[in-house]
Image (cartoon, each protein chain N blue to C red):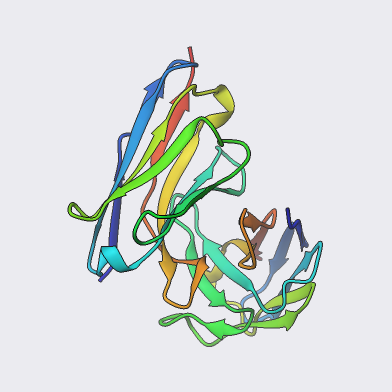
Length: 120
Length: 107
């Protein structure tokens, strides 16, 4: 079965960087686009970024554009999110999610999430 | 960006009740809408895709309908395990956007 396991979260000071990872298993990783979605404490879901199956195309939410970079290593079945110039408003649980087989825009499977706290 | 407005923001109903949640898009999105369920402390789970297609493994008491700008998620007979937050998400274009969520509680 599909397994997505995020790691790399923690407490970081404003302006610093952090890299999240998402280890994928149970499906042919190279064949699927992947997303990052976040959820601030007690708030709703906010889409962050997507990368297509071969890494050729990436799209970002305006709130993270220019600061976050999504990437993938298909040889390691791993998705990444490099987060630079972190702000307090980036504090959230970050989920990685696999695209649905029928649509890049639907998220069929989600990891358990990793918490990022930006605080001095 | 496509805005999604969900209503109600919360609903309290009894076991066995029929519960409906609506989602209105700021522009037409054909049938490109998904619904997710999220229980406290857990990741979201896909329930419905393409407005009305039931994701594998999801109980048949969940159904979705609508097209264009107006969509509905219906739980035909509410069960205790359905206590959760529900989110719609437009699957038409980037940036993906979600509705504000609906919290379903059991009376």
